[in-house]
Length: 427
Picture 1 (cartoon, one colour):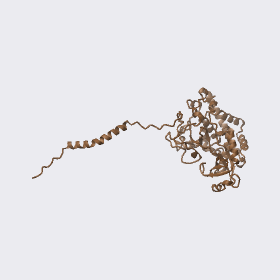
Picture 2: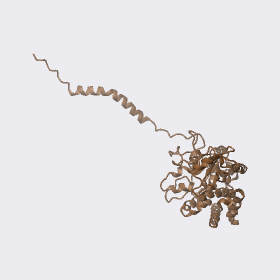
Picture 3: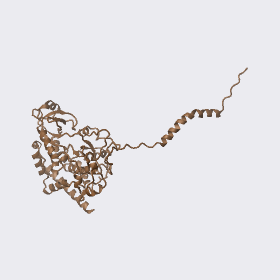
Picture 4: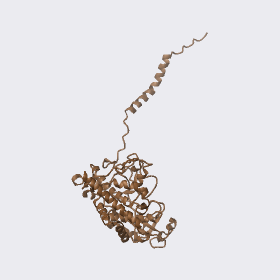
């Protein structure tokens, strides 16, 4: 007797079974997709508490703008010191009470069209006071070098020195003597211009392994490969410095063929006091770098725009900020001697940078006018250099041609200031 064959299920029951098996998966997937559709986009990270970024993007670090921090992979004196505290944002002009200071009286940061107001200048951090600098220089020249350490001061040939009085200094050994000469002359030209408080105190020293100053580090000198009798510079070490990103108009990433924006009185409305305080210092810096033809600061960033369109959003070379908001003009060895040899290469960047500034410290403009009227730029620099640097003769002074170039650049700055004055009067 044959067993009855069970009929195969029809297509509809099979489809129903499949749907029933899929219901649990659909129950979990569909709500997830709905939640994903309703989910709001991730908010951008908020900058640390502090003044608003302002119209030119002040108050935001490279990290806050989505940029890599710092100035590249090279670990220099700048990179070593420019390590902010964890989570701290870079702020334009931060540090001092300028961020909360009242605006200048009358509401305008500019007087007579082209000069920073006195009230605003009074808020600029004092920097390295003349008395403090003189005391450190005297102590550094008399002190013995207790130790020499590699790293932290730029090139591998430089050293970080601990002196017998407990202070520290960067000892710079130039690839050639003109770099140390440029560092020394730039430091004293800043004194002629009335802006030496922005540069760390700097003195020259003679390397003598058997001399009193260097005797404790005779073995380290042997490993440094410094030439006996070479002239080096001792620059005061400064703690707790942070990197500085160029503000607009200079940090606005000008593209090919696009001119830098001008910093003039009409562009300053509504900026917080801290930002204005930093701009006062930047105006001095750009004028100083033009006079010395220093290409190793903002100018090198402008040059790099041709292959790195975001370089202006990164840290500016050889410029750091003190905790009180004061700018520190570091490593000026490219100035004057070395810079004057390379004018043809770097002036296409240095000159437009100067022309982008049409607001000045009145004291700086007055000194430039006096050097122009007397045609005494080189003479004033020589007088100050010889009076304040005991080892000046070891490196000598500017050549006659270099002295002429310095005067010509002073004259150019004077004409530029006069042009800015005429423009402001015509408004």
